[in-house]
Length: 429
Image (cartoon, rainbow, N blue to C red; front, side, top):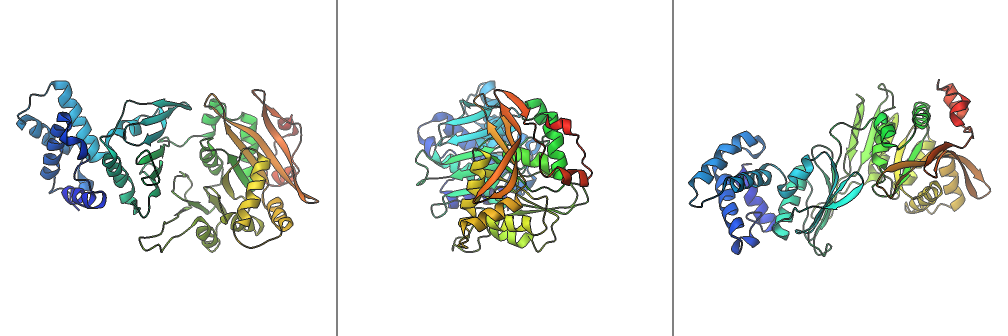
């Protein structure tokens, strides 16, 4: 499909001929930029959209700027060239933020307000869009290449960029401020455990302990709130899985960057226009059990798939990893109970707790602190069921600004030794 054909398709899909349509009538700057933008698009029509590069685009931009009747200062020429390049090849006004490695998250709250997160702190940027249609145009550019759609009948979508960054978009009538985009960026190079140690997320002893737990095939849940760094920690834990094991990852929007050779990545699919064809996390978990997995990694459990995950952990698929939203390890257990009930199996509560206590070995609680830093505040062993209560014990805790071992040796320590992971009792204080 040529660039012009793609633009025409976007015009049909979003009722936008150019990203600047509505404001053009009153803003001379946008009138000029829109005129040059459309001329460049038509000049590039013979080239397939995927083959256009910034080097190829530059002479077309210079030609159109030289031929315009307007007197444009040099700095303004450069600005026009950059903004049109971002519109054609990138994602409009937020392109510079996507390229800025100091930015970890981008939040577009309608056309006139863009926030970013740097070093755990939110900052309002001077960046704006022309109008709602301009934001819609960028959303369409993000979701179309991966076969997702967004419109009034399906006004929210999860997607991902080529670099693995996670994108959520929601549009009116659900978003009252206008089309909203949230992008969780990922580093070009996946974080290593040494990075987390240097960030103060955990200590070297905690890292050694977690590495031993992954090698010994313990089932682990990374728990935490939004933005606490759960997925980053999950990626670090996944890196400890041996190269010769078959790993299946299951996510809503594939973002885990595993370096092992034998990795199968599965991604959910939303329903089509007719409301059919949806493939959920639960469908993929069930299907993964037929794919001879040695490790199953679920990006996040949030519903009935928790039951299937627990059953997999209890039926020989040791070493499985997942994340979940909760503020404490005890809350995570309660959340798992609730999610199993969402599977609609009408299991008694005791049976659910037996499933959880026998399946989950370790809960890693991660928290985003007030200063924006991330800390692993608890590494908690799930002991089992006593009466009607699932019992736990903390192996490491973050208290009063300090990481401390509790002095308790985990009950599964023999499993670590049998797997060749002798740590020495001193690691537990």
